[in-house]
Length: 137
Image 1 (cartoon, rainbow, N blue to C red):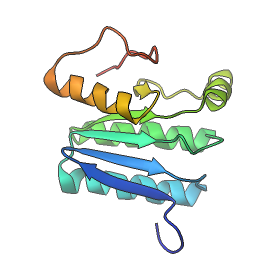
Image 2: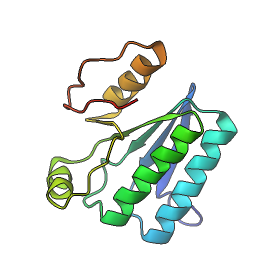
Image 3: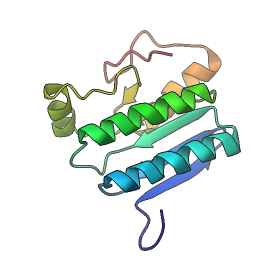
């Protein structure tokens, strides 16, 4: 993301990448984020990806589609994706409009997202996560 304050930060933590979206992104910024994140997944040979959307007040249909597409590209590159921090009112609206995250696992926060990735890496899959989402690895 070029110029001005960072709209998204992508940090490496061990074999995982953590992408934090700091503000609403327009469609072209979402496409750039998708490209940058997928490029870093390959560059770092990441095994897990967490996308933190806690700062977002709205996730529109294009953003939801982009998140699902990123997760699919990551999966094809050998990485698992967890989306964390969907605010309750945003989750409510997304569900009412049929804009879910499909089979991409979600978690309440970064800590739970890291736990889900760690459990997947060690092969100890939980029967369910505290958020109620069943990871579909």
